[in-house]
Image 1 (cartoon, rainbow, N blue to C red):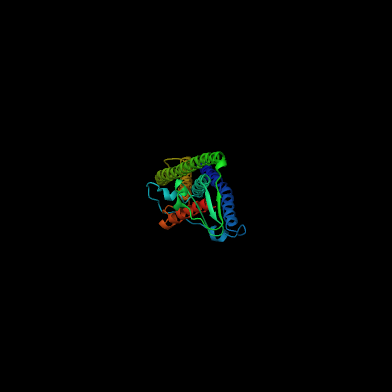
Image 2 (image 1 turned 90 degrees about the vertical axis):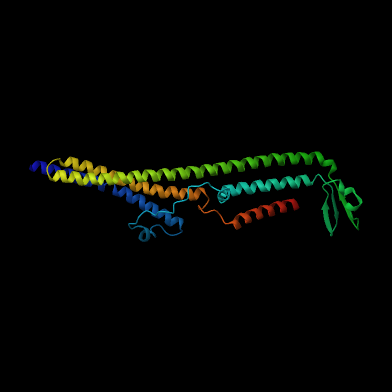
Length: 279
């Protein structure tokens, strides 16, 4: 009986030492994460140790509504906005190139206008004054039309880039949503597993104290409990990370941008087109 008791003690000591051996690696990861946050915030490494180094539950964000993603929400993404602006700018260039096909009349220092049809040759289409000038790139028509074709091809390319960017953004959002939802399912299952493992530990401890099982059964049951608890904690962290992934995929948040933001973007695009046409 004495030897059996010593064996139980040694097995318990081994189990304790094995568990303690995992702590340094976790501490290294924690300190590294704290130092990375400090650098990102522009402070010296270690400055956040007192504020974030203690025990605290994993932050839980608001659960997003499982609904379709409006297009305006994707416009918050920098890559989508960049592709959209590129397409708008390229479209404006077509207007500039096409305008070169038509004659230009100027009255130096007064005004200028361009004609887009045969009406410019009618008497009421031109008001002659002092210092009129007439310029028409009629002999460059072939070159101008070639330029327009080039700009059309570039616009098609910009449109394809924009469509591909939007599709990739939708893929990113969809993957983030699936990862978040599936990790929540996994977390709930692990929670049930932990509850069952803790009940098993209580039961086997009672059986051990009554002499119905040996200490090895206790150790095995405790190891199972610790493994499941560790998996649950990791899953809770993954749920939060995946929720952050949704916000990142949507360009900063789940709430759709205010109408003023969309209107501002549209107005800026229109101003860019107008400026290009007037250059």
